[in-house]
Image (cartoon, rainbow, N blue to C red):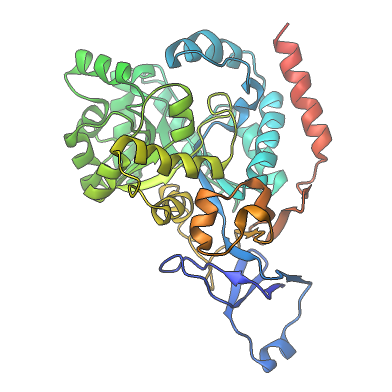
Length: 425
């Protein structure tokens, strides 16, 4: 067992309140939360005791939308519109990637996630075998989202991957999904709707990221992307819409009624000038909200602290109201909201039986003082520098600047640079 003592704990079982309790983990799970008796301490056997020295232990962040292996395009194709960026730069470069490339590029992303207190990602990419191998070796949790596009024949591959990767490892799960309306034939979307019915499973997809995407969908089908998906059974069992920047009232009603999560990616949407998602209106309607970074080619970083700040700040600007979308909503979206969007129902909070996916926030730094409100400090003034420890499934993968992922960070950096130097020729 591992014992966390002498610290503050944000359990997030009900709210963002802070408790002065101990947390013990056993293998991959939390086994004790509270103030131990002398008898409990006498009978306990710890492999390690971590003195928090007044710092904060809290549930980790979960990145609910990303494309990890796109680390190779970080700062490669910037300052372009989304359509030009995607079709003229991203897709042609991605076509060159091998499975081995994706293995190393995913490992690079994992290092960055860990420094930001992230222990799980909801990732959409190809070559899933290499991707899964990188995550299992690193000890990092992942939920794969189907990334198919094109014609209806690709629904068979999606179903095969769904059955193949669910259950392959405790750290890995797979959810039905496809890239977007504008890259998928009508027949493919319909076939995926049939898969949703067959498996009674949620489906996740890029949705209403740009005005152009929505307008072209309406011209083609006389429906918004959300209306189209709903008509074909995509959201019959819930799921997630990534971005959701341009949502009609009817779109929002569909999300609410179907239990679909709106996964906001404010950093990417701002950088690509896609717009600001109407999160306040969604929240008022009772729509489930989650938070993601999007990929490192469009963001360009995988930093949940920056994403949290932008999530609230952009809403304040859009609403012209400094009280809009308060820090508690942001912190919930980045942790429990994202976990629920990903189906990680055992990674929600610090309580007995939950997965030991935990982070330590260093409060003894100037940007976190004074401690007027720790939760708001995390959202408004916190940064990656405050993450001193990241634990996933009971294993410490990052601590005080040092990674414990089975591979030296310098080797991962070198491999990533080899890949981009080769493809940039």
